[in-house]
Image (cartoon, rainbow over all chains, first blue to last red; front, side, top):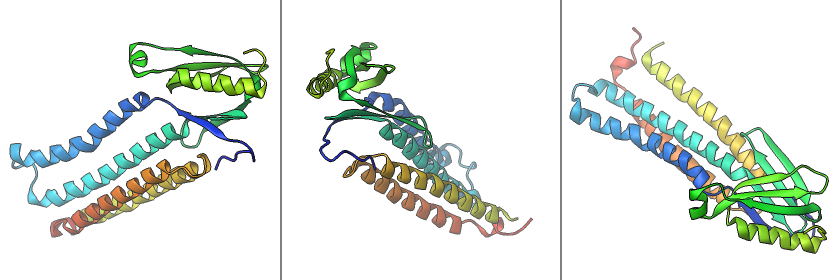
Length: 170
Length: 73
């Protein structure tokens, strides 16, 4: 598990907005519901397509298929869940999850944050209140958190604790 | 190999692959989340429950495969 310092306190955990997971969720829902429905209605429209002999085999393969879809769903969700930003009162931990076995973990001490800018990428982001946070740091490359829910509140919180930690350019 | 043996092989291989993937997911969720978080545990428990139900269905339908599929051709 992620180890925090003795006096370190987690202020906020940021994950991408649920909207970024919606597309995958809809696809998985269709994959999960579609084939069982097709198999159930097929005997009504094509009475000779599924004979009694292949009936058990078809349902056996359907159960295996649903297990595979369920596992793929869990895998996709875990990648979404592990791709996170953890803001503590001392640092910002960025875990970029690119697949199950590939991730980049970086840390920024709050006192090194120089500036934070917000980008709202479009209509849906405006309506659902999410955006991209670009964090400029002293001596390091910029960090970007994409599709942050309630990005204005997140920005204010990071700036507030960065000032307390001694950030001078804010 | 009879069709029935092929179905059993499919089940065993499928289970082995899924067990590997799920073990890797649980390992990463344990290692890279903060202590005390219950969301990941709840999701994994739900997944395992659904998987056991589906596995039960698969075994149920496998046992109902007709005799003609169990005879070598």
